[in-house]
Every structure is written in structure tokens, then in C-alpha cells.
Length: 594
Image (cartoon, rainbow, N blue to C red):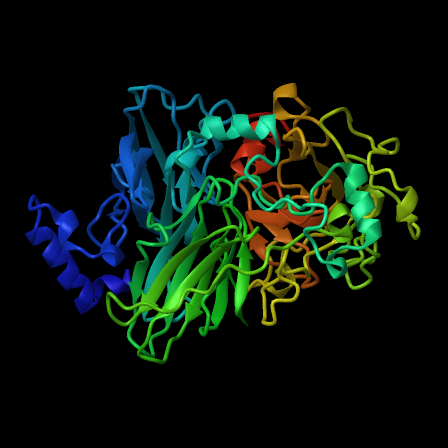
């Protein structure tokens, strides 16, 4: 990493090494202490072609309290793994837990047997056992890795991975910092899940009261609608600051992780959302950010003041501070109940003002899938973006016809008579008029007074490699019952053994995800990248995870070029655990008849 060559970092490392065994915790101020390692702001780094990781139990201290963590090599987050495109990678995992574990390489293109999903691509790593992952590195960019076993990810089983390009990097920078965002709870994750099942809004401390809202914030029609649906317009995040401390590289807000720069440098921030359940709004007051990559894939540079980062997404941004002063890095939660906080500064110990939490957002009619028709959105029909061949099209769930102007006063959001998937107590609403929301900045960011990134701002730096028009379209509904904390895809939980989603090897498919719920879902497919259909035909942004906003829909084009069985799921950990997951089968496999 470029910052490892700075004199300041060398001095800090030398001081740390010279003090081994001398009670280091008291020698370093709070800004230099990690919740786990307590030595320096640097992430411990592993590199080379043969690496070992040990999964075990560790105490983790943050905010003056100590809890129990699952760690890799004893640190949280897990070590930074730094590789180079084109190399071979071999990693042996020793499991010292009393339960099975796994590692999924999020966003990496690997043989499906190496993908690390127990019960889908391999059996898992048994307690007190080991497993060796081995595969070639065929890409570059910012990625991460995490457990796909139980709820271990919530307890600290995650870490960053950077793959340097084998050739010249198209992004020019003088220094970089890897920034891992996460959420930490002193509750055991199974206790969190149990509380959510007992009451979906258990951790929501911002619930509305009868007279707790100004008249100009909600119309009488909206009040009646929310009351009829038994839904709370403040129900934006399942788990909030009431249970979470929000971490930056394992540091709580008071510990203030600090990344250094010299004024005038171009600093690359590789930002990874490794949180189990938290979507963050990222900004650096007084310092614009230029987005240069999303999910490890280069995009045309776009300058913004803020962006929303869903669980499992990554963004690379360039900042160029010219002043000899500190800047606060703010990762505010989507519901604005809390924040992760760090500092960028020329010298250790400097701080900048920390902005207060902004006014909480609330949901509205558009988030129920009841917005007006989005005439600015792309037409996904025969003349739409991507040139869909409807004559050869096969469908999943039938797409609903365009809705006329709606009489909201008579709307029954539980009228599911026209849907083609199983509907029961696990589905409490069907969005009557979902619209493409790739032009929206995210919940609560419409009127913040500065430029916020949207998916429509993202344009692939290079042309999309597969220029074929999709020959088939599939519509997938993201479904649930928020009050009962039940989550599913097309009305079925994974435990109900729904039919897999099937693709023929190398076929070109357009997938449209319709969010019938009032929560944002970051959806991730394993083993593949896809092109988000956002109006930039031929240069659609290439991603592995995309947020589908409440009452909205997102289309992506995908070439099913990786044979095997792959997971497709919401990356809100408790949503996946509750059932919002499917298996994608790409066939034929090598050696099978077509």
C-alpha cells in the first residue's frame, strides 16, 4: 500500500515493534488504537501465493466494553489479503471453532467448488478441521471475504481483499487507504434474530407517535395508508444504533481511526461495506469525492459529495485535500440512528468537527410502490435499452401490466390475486406500481442540498464485453412480511426448497428484480458480474451487488458464463438467514452433455 511508505507510518510501526511486551495499550492515544490490535491504523496484510488463516474466538473491545468475536488470525476485521491479477492463490483455513465455518470470496470469479457456500458449493469447513482454497486470480479491484456459515459474519468473520492489476492501473493516485465499514453488537446474533422475529421493529427507537410528526411531513392519505397496512414509515433499518456500534477498520467512533495524507496528494479510498445489516451514507464534509470504481470495476470518474453504499458493495474514490487540516469521514446509517466516524489528516492526533446526525428519513408512497409512472426511466420493452428480443423471451413470474392512475383511498396492498407466485402470511404487500429507481440517491437523500451518487451516474470505463441482446427475461419479486420478519423471493423462503433459477451456460438473460417490500435490499449473485441497466447502453456499470429500493425495480443483463450452483440472496444478513435466498444453476457442467 502506498501509505506504508510514509515516514509517519514507519515511525509508528517502529515504535510498536520496539514496545512489544511492554504493555502497548497505554502507550498509544485513542486515535491510534484499534478495538483488536491496539497498535496502528494499518490493517495487518497477507500476500503471496500460499497463505494461512486461523478462525477462532477472541475478545473484542470497543467503546470501553468487551465482547466475544469470531476472528481470523486474531484480528477484527480479518487481515487484508493483497494479491496480483494473474497469480495463483492457495489459502489454507484452520477452523478452531466448535462449529463449521467457511470463507466466501465476495465478487471473485472462482470455480464454484471454491465459492465457499456450505450446502451449495462445498460441505463447509468442519469444527477443528481445515480446508484449502486454490484458484487463479483473473481480475483486479477492491473486494472482500466473509463467512457464509450461520451468522458468523456478524461476529467479526470478514476482511478486505485488494487485487492489483497486472498492467498499469487506470486510476492515478499517490496514496491509498482501505476502509472497512461494519456494525458490531454485544448481543449474540441469534439473540438479535430472535428479537426481530418476536417484533420486527424491536430495535427501532424512532417510531412515530400519533402527534410526533409535523403536518407537512405526512398527508392524511399517507397516515391512513400506513395505518391500514400496519406499517411504520420510520421502519428503515431492522437493527439500529440501539444494538450496534458502527466501526471503521475495527475502530468505534470514539477511537477515531485516522488515515494520513500530505496536502495535494491524490488519495485513493477503497471503501467496503462489510456490515451485517447496515446501509451507510458516506460523505467527507468539505472534501468532494471522485468515484472511480464500483464493486472492483472501473467507472468513468464522477464527482460527488455523498453516496449510499449497500451491504457488500465497494466503492473506490479519489480525494485530493489541498489544505493542511483534518477532515471527518462520516458513515451515517441509512436510518440516521448512528454513524461510523474516522479522520483523514496530515498528522496523527488531528481531528475535525463531527457533524451531528441529520434528521431521520421517513418512507412515503413511492416506497410502497405507489409512485407516479417514471417517464424518465428506460423502456424495457422491445425498443428499450439493450434491444430485448421479446420473440425469444422466456419468463419467470409474469410481469404486471402497466397500472392506470390509482385510487389510493381504496387500495388494498394485500390484494395478491394477480401474482403468479405463492402468497401466504409471509407476503404482506405487493407493490402495485413499481418503477425504475436507479436515478434515486437512496432513502432520505433526495434533498440534502449537495450531489449524491445514483446508479445512473455510473458508466463503465470500458465497453461491456458481451454485446448480445438478452434472449430471455426473468422477473423476480423480493417479498416479505415486515411485521413478522419473514423474508423471501417470489413468496418462498429457501427452507421451503423452491425451484432453482436456471440458466443455460453462456445464455444472455435480462433479470428484473421487483421490490414488493418497504426496505432496501442489496442483492448479490455469486460467481458472476452483471450489467445494471441504467440508460448507458453498451457501457452499463458492471456490479456483483445492487440495491433495490423499496417499491422499485432494477434490471440487469447477465451472461451466465460460470457453470455450477451459485447463491443469489439479499446481503442483509438476517434477511438471508430468514429465507431471502435462492440457488442459481448454470448448466451444463464440464463433461455433461448440452
